[in-house]
Length: 225
Image (cartoon, helix red, strand yellow):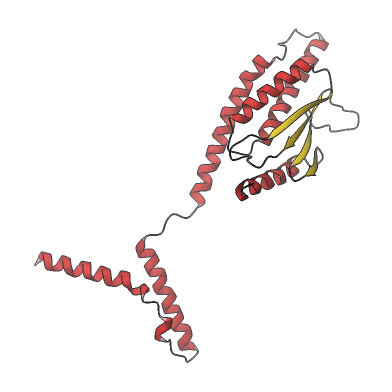
């Protein structure tokens, strides 16, 4: 495993711990499970009618060149095996659209949205308010495609903001001035301590750029004459 993948996995798992403090079960640094429900239960009288457990296994090449290995299990509710299989295929499609980046949270969010829509549809049918639109992989994929686009926009915005905070490359003049300041500081410290600065302690490279600039200026003056 490359060090960059190991760092990415560690950072992602740490983030997931803060997002799913009670739902996340860590078996090892490369294997964990997340219990996913449509919404957070606020009281003891509330219950979720459906639930899915997402089990993730990190592989050495994730996230650089592969998506995470994962399985989903129907732990509560009436989701059929066919629906679970179709959901798994769609989750793989979704993860592949984020290949090269950490995507476990995206997978978990997609599952939670599916469960939320599944629950809403079931409640509408049960209340006889209306027939509603049954949740199918086809109509849910339409939402998923919009979700992926929005996620990529957010990630790109975060990348740009992060890049803005990084210092730009220094010019030759800035590097030279920093070196001069370092030398002046060193001479000042030595003078304060009543010491001499030995010739060997002075970096001649600090003055090379200055000398080069003087030579260029002299050549320009001769050309003008």
